[in-house]
Image 1 (cartoon, helix red, strand yellow):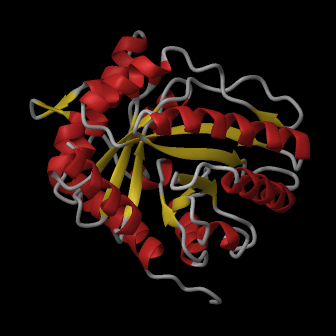
Image 2 (cartoon, one colour):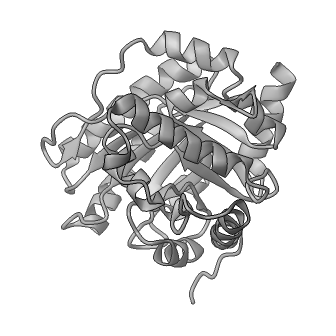
Amino acid sequence: MTDVREMMRERVTGGAGFVAALDQSGGSTPKALAQYGIAASAYANETEMFGLMHEMRVRIMRAPSFSGERILGAILFERTMRGTADGTPVPAFLWNRGIVPFLKVDEGLQPERDGVSLMKPLTGLEARLAEATRLGVFGTKMRSTIRNASHDGVAAVVDQQFEIALQIARLGLMPIIEPEVLIDSPDKAAAEAVLRDALLRRLDALPKGMQVILKLTLPSDPGRYGDLLGHASVARLLALSGGYPRVEACRRLAATPGMIASFSRALTEGLQVTMSDREFDAALERSIAEIHEASTRKRVGD
């Protein structure tokens, strides 16, 4: 297992590719299904809704284009982690294809206060992490949101993320920290500057040898996160699409040094439940190719 985890680490930290985000949950699931062509009238309750979402995710994971050739990792919703693909537990199915599995561990957001939304308290975290480890998951992801350039609010978001990241790392998993600056923020560039400084403060205080992955909104200034890229405690810098259409997200990503994609909606854009398997894989191939190019071939200064 130690050798496998080291292989996963090398793949995530040094591979040429991107991380797929297949972790829609709760409020984002109906939107994801609607984008896929499944209306709310197609399911009667949450169990049926998540069942349809799992079918969509498995269809993506089984597609020939969805392989470790260009995809380094995939972030999973808890129910997806516990499910199967072709009779194989999903984390093992992904790793068999060269894709490193991660688990979304946050349980949603608290009401916005001081320009930010902290995570709700994480219940039963150690038990979920133990289960994830048994299933072969390499790391975790947790999300907060930032609307305003509030120094106190941003500090609270970052402090909460890092305190939980320390717990996760002590249990042997790699934390992905995602303090998302909302793309409709009235002072997005200023919020990103405040976030960068808060991240550097906490990164400098991490125990020697500990690393985290950062997942951040594509910045207004492409060079905003340059100081984070070279930090010894940053294993990788991921970009979230944040609601930008894929073309715009990839344009911004290609202009941002050092960041690779971890897209959700932008990845699945254009996929439809009514497509044949051949049509579905062709559409997914176009998406993967575009996102991979933006992650690995930078057009800085264009």
